[in-house]
Length: 488
Image (cartoon, rainbow, N blue to C red; front, top):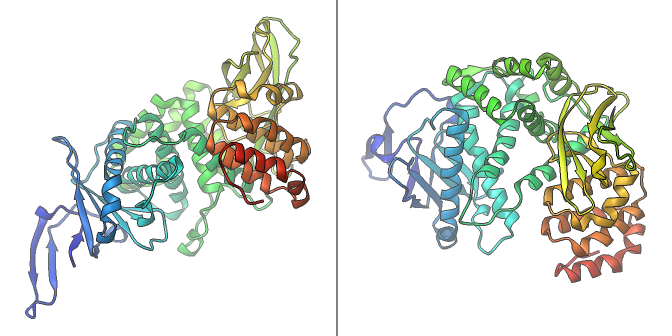
């Protein structure tokens, strides 16, 4: 045994000794603040330790991995230390409460069955994250998200603990969203990360898929025992849950949302809480938005299913007070709940430039938006910047414009949203798969994003084999041109 990591620094070990035969080493730690028994962690093995040489006042950090991985670990230690430090600083500011422990260990262990697991002052991660060769930016970004996610749990699950499994979905969803939001707002210098907003949108995909099936369910449900708790996590409680937290922040605004979180943690730090405790701090801020929080909660938390929205407008109208109608309906007729959606409506100019308006889509079939038609907009995209969990459909005018001018749209997330809207139209039978593949093959040679290229090629492979064979040569040519390889 070379390394042992408890939840206290070495100087807080009360005593250590060997037994009479000298075969065993014993450590006795001093008392700590109360901790749940399930969160105590003892990690022992042939681990090497790498210390963080931070600035005065920084929380001491130590990285642990198997000795055999030291060579590879040293190449990426600066990256892990940087993400850990900056995400801790971000959450301290956003949640308004200092990190509550006096050290932070990151232990990379073999054959761990999860990406990461947080315990007090210690995060355990799969040592597959110790990369032995250069990886694409998405791999480093996923690791950074795991680090930030587990860091967030030191507030969401340690500082305030959930009273029962019913509310565990919220802490997981909250950590999922806030880790993405954290990485969007901190600057990582050691390694270039992927586009976080695009990765979050891709993460939402599983939620979109599952929430349109007849097996969908509300995010919040009764969990009567731990057997039920083992089965509560799926694309709805995680992907849709994280998107719902994001939508909540978009309604209130980041500052008001942060203020509510600060009051929640400052009041209930060190205690147990239930979902309603957090909602109590959020509901008062809804009044300033002329919204009924209980109604929003019923729509988003307690009702199953999702909505789809589609624009109806006349591109030829040049009136300064032109009107656009947002039509909302339920994705599944048997789940007819309509919801409030805080979104941005993107208006596209001929040169690819974009103007947008903030719009609160009402919980009804039609919401009317007034815009300046004199600017001669060529296309419209609902849910621009991806604020809500909602399926977006394109009108014919916008579809035609994007099919001819997508290369002029410079923002990666915006292109991703357009691709997704078109794919949803294929999925729903509104356009045929051949038309969609033709659109992709026209656009992908000009596409600069590796993430979009790989994802869209994966989507093409989901089409029926006969369709795929029809386009096989063209698909291969696109990938050869982009220096990729695909096996069709």
